[in-house]
Length: 129
Figure 1: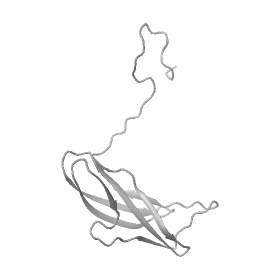
Figure 2: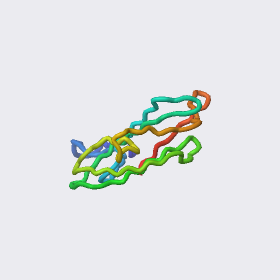
Figure 3: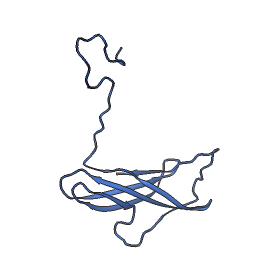
Figure 4: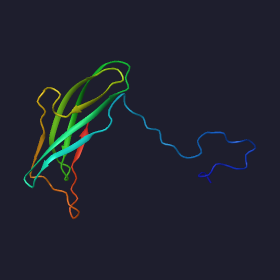
């Protein structure tokens, strides 16, 4: 049985891996924790604020281009934003999507949104590349 460490060995177990493990390999630059807020939602229009937490594990500064797609519950892209961000070595930074080139923060507007309810739990998706 591979689910239980052997008990009949002639040595003591002091450590090691006795179960299946999964190794996660991260890119040197990645989106760590996206945050999505909906300050206003009505049946005719919704406003959305998307913040991407970018993280660098690189030993040097790097200019990154972040593309963010917002998909509706049908999987259709309804909004795309492009941001250029310069990350220093081992830096983590919050990026308000669609606002890297301006000091006047904008919200994403979704017209005629699919509203969420227990009967119709519509969900939108944010994709980062």
